[in-house]
Amino acid sequence: MAAKKLCETFSKSLIDEVQKWGCMKQTGVSLRYMMEFGSKPTPKNLLISAQFLHKELPIRIARRAIELENLPYGLSVKPAVLKVRDWYVDSFRDLRSFPEIKSSDDEKEFTQMIKAIKVRHNNVVPTMALGVRQLKKGLGLNNIGSLDLHEIHQFLDRFYMSRIGIRMLIGQHVELHNPNPPPDRVGYIHTKMSPVEVAQSASEDARAICLREYGSAPNIKIYGDPSFTFPYVPTHLHLMVFELVKNSLRAVQERFMDSDKVAPPVRIIVADGIEDVTIKVSDEGGGIPRSGLPRIFTYLYTTAKDPLDEHPDLGTADLVTMAGYGYGLPISRLYARYFGGDLQMISMEGYGTDAYLHLSRLGDSQEPLP
Image (cartoon, rainbow, N blue to C red; front, side):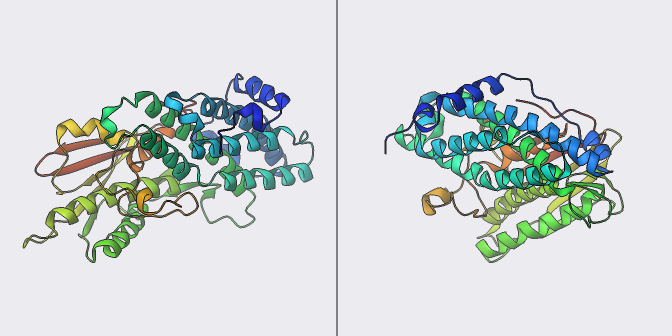
């Protein structure tokens, strides 16, 4: 199938509109603002929120659609990337063709539409991963180090950071409609989230996958006060801790699989500072050579078999394996940075790795807007 440029798939007026909106200024929102605004989900506030999204989402989506059309090394014409681009342009068109939101009925209809947009974009990450794999294959590169993919890496960072923001804004608005929200919840935000409890649940999930893949799994020890709470998005924290613990379990399991020694536990320490809550995930899985450390945050760096080789239809199924397609760490770092935190890795080759997940406790940093 010949790659279709934007102008062959969509009307000129729509493309002009995408270009125009892609040049407009984005507006960032802080965690604190989302929390304060959403704590009173009155019809009036929901209307204001919908009107904001009606203007903001097309700007953010148009920017990504334009970038998807102008990627280096011919990545833009890979079939998987074209598919993603079309999802973005379709969503832009849906938003722009929706009339002005003036009443609660309009707002309810708009909410259903953005809910559908969020579902449309569910498989963006594996589909983009497939696109970059198609590029590697086309260039005859199995060793990603033989090509400087710096530009593509920077694009993916911007692209996924923006996706986190879009999904947070849509999800938050949709969740404010929940007639029976769980206690201490404001949309996606848990105002009294216990990081120790979330770490426990994420660790159990990661350990279950390790057991499934290897038949056994190292123990996990969590240190910290379970009654300590702060406002955050539990789904984001779960995703990050799950990823870090999964990597640690795999490293320890593979290092001690054929050993007579008992595999040492993975340790999770939760510390509450004044500015940051920090979660350290510490393992004795042998560590990473210092030369390899810069690569762990680049997309497509993975020491494991590629699940896309074994499951070429991964675009349709979200398959969770012990080792992904090299996206777990860079995407976890974006989730941390989205609300003003960060993720750092320190490794001792021959011993193990410590991951430091910093979460901003203040919640007043603006979203990063790529």
